[in-house]
Image (tube, chains in turn red, yellow):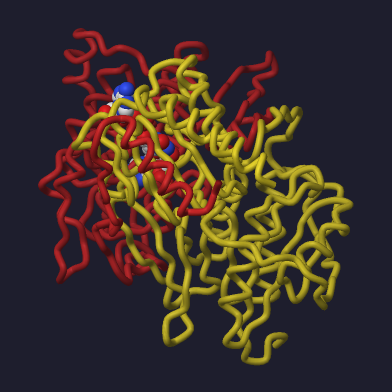
Length: 265
Length: 337
Ligand SMILES: Cc1cc2nc3c(=O)[nH]c(=O)nc-3n(C[C@H](O)[C@H](O)[C@H](O)COP(=O)(O)OP(=O)(O)OC[C@H]3O[C@@H](n4cnc5c(N)ncnc54)[C@H](O)[C@@H]3O)c2cc1C
Ligand SMILES: Nc1ncnc2c1ncn2[C@@H]1O[C@H](COP(=O)(O)O)[C@@H](O)[C@H]1O
């Protein structure tokens, strides 16, 4: 194995999602107030990369497109054991949809070069699009497999991939280079030892801008994104919210009446 | 110019082993509605020996079927499927292309969108047309706590994946429709990973999406023994059992029973949620239900925000007597017939 790239996305910490608010003028979410974490599935992607490296050698490179403030999150991945990180950061990247994001990540992968595998999380918890894996692979001209729950290797260097489908699994055999996005069943992200945290301090995080990647600016950011935000709302539900009071016996009687009125018995 | 100013709406007909995924029929229902102001609905059906499915597609609303029959399309693989669909889009230039947000659709749609360089919105829960005939795509984000409306003003086709269960299929009836066989041109090599095995577990009981009544249990149910109460209540009401993630992780329920962002979207007549906190991840999958009853011992449980009928009580004090009451009522109904 020469090199394994793992795509890592900073996402707003779900513990604080209740605090999300909206800027009505720009129709964007005020994300600043919410701390970021590494997208949970991306830790499984990092673990996948590390375990392949531990068996077959090579290096694990983390790749992220994010503001410079994402560096501490990349350090977490380095503390797990990744060898180095590349952070793609440029104001012209802001507002990218999944296609533009994938174009930028593809440029990052080419910049890093010479890789056998790219691992991603199957989906991110904020946008939850689950689109980047297939789009990145298409733009790199490589095959991809999503929903990966198992990996094993043959003696000839082929990889047997198990993936989740509706009500079951399918198994595929592939030859690197491949782009794979993983589900949490694949593995258990390793415990970070204190020595790992210390070692991470001296590992390299290279920050690249579009001066390095030289992507046509009309293809990225808000301008290069085919999808546009036409509306945004923070959900509020309108329901009757009628509380049934009384002793359990009374509640059961009232519940029976409700169910009867709805007409299902 | 095969569309003559009419809107051309495509629906991906997803089949595995000759079995059509029902989300495709739901999408045809929606496509028919979108086409009601002037448009044509086309079902795109790749596979091998699947021509028989065409009839069902037409009866559910397709004006025509584009059938791509080839042995190399017999088992879904992303490279041949995406090459085929990309090529068909370039040849026919549809305005809208809809796919199910299934394991297959979620993987395939983004690859096709990147190939033809257009926009794609993921896991849509609603679709409509604006006054200029552009597709408005409603997508949940942040676990469903935020709902965005996305459009794709300048690129075609406008693509979306749609949650299974979010749209309603039309009742099938004999309809007129044409079937065209398209020529399949694929390279002989470099078709990507090969499928060597498919294992399917049998789904149990009434499928969630078809049930009029869904009784869903959460972590608060506490044990496999208690879970039987959920199953009993559901079967007495002629309904299906749903679950949040923890019961699935515990093995009380099957993966296919999970409701929510990473599970199913349901819209039954009646949803009863028991021992469920009501995190957005779950709520997005059930909020379309006609009636929602929530039972939770915590008066501040979030699920009460989304409920029509609220019961603040330990379910163990409510469900067993409720089951007895329903049995009594059913017995009376039975004897009066
Ligand atoms: C990316 C992502 C996707 C996810 N997708 C989904 C999804 O699709 N579907 C899904 O469901 N989850 C999903 N989850 C998980 C989700 O965030 C929650 O963890 C889950 O929905 C919580 O399930 P719960 O309400 O059963 O459990 P809990 O949150 O633990 O709630 C249990 C509830 O039971 C109540 N309770 C306890 N004892 C009793 C009693 N005796 N009587 C009555 N009430 C009682 C408690 O008050 C509590 O409110 C997802 C998470 C992530 C990160
Ligand atoms: N900005 C980004 N930087 C690095 N990786 C990303 C980025 N966006 C998405 N990814 C990767 O793509 C996966 C799926 O994300 P998404 O398609 O946004 O749901 C994530 O788990 C990451 O591995």
